[in-house]
Length: 436
Image (cartoon, helix red, strand yellow):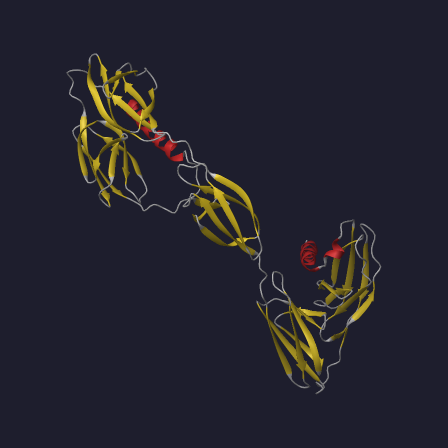
C-alpha cells in the first residue's frame, strides 16, 4: 500500500514538471531506478524526475514520446552515478540498479565556496548552470570559485535568472524575487439605459456603467437586469491583463397598469361588489378571479342572504395578485373581533393586513375578525416584514417588528416576490378555514 501511494505521488509530480514533448499520447511503460541511498535525485537527460524513496523510484513514460537516453542519480556527499536508458515497450518496466559511493570527508579547500539561494515565494526549483539542484531555500556546497547562472522556477510565476560570483572560502547569497503571471482581466460594462444591475456568473457586481476587475481569464456569463426591461444575457471572454467593453441595449417590457384580485368567502356563494359594481359570486371552493383590475385602491363588498355585509379595501399593484378572504358572520350574531397593535423599528412603515393598507406604524387597529391574518410591513430601504398573526376575540395581538436594511441585490427570479406573497395569503386563508 505504501508503495502504491508513493507511485501515485511521483506520477502527480511528473505531470507538473515533465515537458509536454515527453507526454505525447500513446501507450505507457515504466523505468525503475534502484539505488542504495534514499533521498538521491534522479534525472533523465538532465530533467529532474523525483527522489529515491524505499531504495527505488518508478517513473511512467510514454513509449511513443521522445525517448530518454541517460539517467543520472546524485546526492550531496556522494559521487554521482549515471547509465544508459533503453525505453520500455508498452506495459513493460525496465529496471536499472545503481550504487552511490560517499565522497571521503576532507578538510574544505580554500578553492571552494558555496551558494545559498532563497526565493519569494519559497519553494522554487533552483537550477545551477542549467542543472537542477533542489528547492529554495537551498545551499549548494563545494562550488569552485567563479561565476555561475542561477535560475528559479515556480508554477504560476515567471522564471527568474541571475548570475552570481563565488569566491574561495566564502558564501554567495542569491535572492530570487518571483513575479506572478497575469491570469486575470477586466470588463467595462455599459448599457442603454444606464443603472442596470450587472451579474457575472450569477454574482451581483454593481450597476452600469461599471468596471469589474480581477476576473479570471476565459469565458464568463453576464446578465443585465433593469426594472421595466427584458433581461440582457451574453457570454463574454475576459482577456489576460486587459479590459473588454460590454455594451448592452435593453429592450423595454410593454407596460401593464393592471393587476388581479382573487376573492374567496366562507361560506361560498356571496355576491361580490367591486367599487359598487357586481363582479360575480364566490365559488363554494376556490376563489373568484377578477382580472385586468386597474392599479390603485378599490373597495370590495360581499353580500349574502342571512349574513352581515363584509367590506374591505384592496390595493392593486401592477402585475400582482391581491387576495381577499372573507369570513361571513350570520345576521344577529355579534362578529368575533379583536385588535392588532403594530409597531416597527424604525417607525413610519406602511402596514397592510390581508393585503389591505391600514396605516403607518405605530398603529393600533380594532374590529379585526378573529382568526389568522397576514401582516405585511414595508418601508423604503428595508426588507419587507411578513408574518401570520392570530387575532383572538376580545383581545389585542401585539406585533413589534425590527426591520432589516435591504441587502445587496442578488440574482433571483423576478416572479419570486409575487409567488411568495400569494403563497403567504393562501396559507392564511387555509388557516382561517381550518379554524372555522
